[in-house]
Image (cartoon, rainbow, N blue to C red; front, side):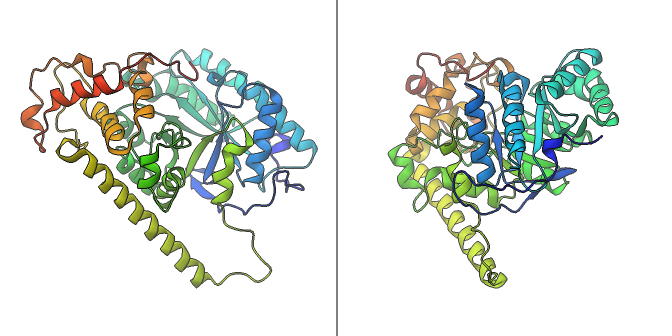
Length: 413
């Protein structure tokens, strides 16, 4: 099936935000190669003009991959209008725009077919580059996708040429994600992969080794509100800024692409600043370039080590090592995740972020944890399992005292 007219290769003729380099594209499953940064459209939904301004900034930053969803309100229709406007100006990335949209799990085949048709209509396209199951978070979601109507839907969508490849996003357990990736059904995944939450990094590395594309979900916001870092964190990350270090850490790990949920053009600043410079008439020496890349990677690794050491120094013997040996909890308290938030608050001064995440617990359905530290019954089952000898019930109580506050509303849903 032919791609939409605006998705055909057209070189940008203008650069409305100033010159930048061109990101080398990265493999993303079985689809076309993507830019290391992806424009997430969930925040540019106040007006079509806002979406257009953000899209122009993404083009100037060397981005070719766009991520959207019906759950993002008017994002798809606003994005279609912006793409059409840029097409009229002859402005697009080399190779055209690549679009990923998403469908929530559940429902029968017919309803899924209608939902996908509505996505294509809103975007004004005949084919999506990629389609993701949006929130493969529970065992019932996985069963729907592998053996139920979801499996029929994904097979039909690809056979009809409506989507180029299929994948999923997940906020679920590591075991569930591993089962999804091991099914052979999916060509890419979107996961919470962050400098300050490396739980799923081994899964991501294995997926990449297996040729599955990996997109990191919101490393700036859900990765720690790194656009507004506390003073302790700024000092800990030197000589890098916290957000820069988080981005470089994930890029150096080989993650296919990192999402940037931009609400304004300035939110794409780091994608522009980290991009390689424009090539000069005399090409750089490959050996020299390789040495510079190696030096930067070494500097990033050293900064990450210093960051961990700073947190360990503040936490002392109360640091949770995130080994998960304390599980399962008889009361189903998510001990590692709660103590991870405490690690961030005490170890890096990230109390605002930790409190924000803590107070979403129990208020976000299957998208986040259901029980907070107040659910601990002090049964002591976790104590002999902890290899560090942590007083886990006491630390959970301290976590609740530090972080419990008035609830915050989720961005969407």
